[in-house]
Image (cartoon, rainbow, N blue to C red):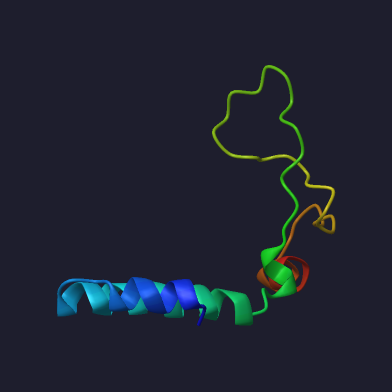
Length: 81
């Protein structure tokens, strides 16, 4: 922990404030040490089609393999997971 973190913990008035400061400091340290998995870096969805007012992206996504005309449950699992 940095000196500033230790000072903020030591400068807290109550035990509860000290615990909160320590928790915040430990959370920051943990964020620095944890590697983000590759599957968390998903590119944004393509731009919506003009005039399309549907709430979800229901078009063919170029990032995913094309589904067959009549997909089975096995096709869904193989191509989407």
